[in-house]
Image (cartoon, rainbow, N blue to C red):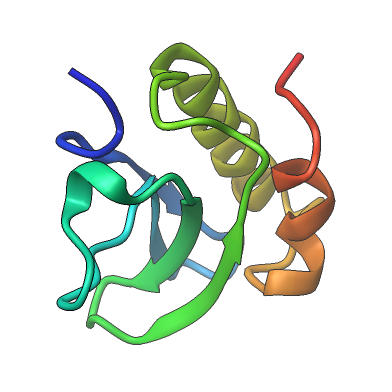
Length: 99
């Protein structure tokens, strides 16, 4: 399996009490077959479905364990308040391989 067929999801509770779902995977495109897509994205979505942020990553669709580590890193930062739920805040993490 790869991130083409599986989306990594983690829920973070922000310091203000809101819940945000961190999703990492290959987003669908109605014009391109999923097997041909290579872009792995991170999305932040509030519990009510409102999209807060979306950025592309440097991850490949086969890097599931790295995507899981990235989801954990973003979730931890959001919960600690050291990351804002914005594209600008998560983009630097998406542009590096997780530690």
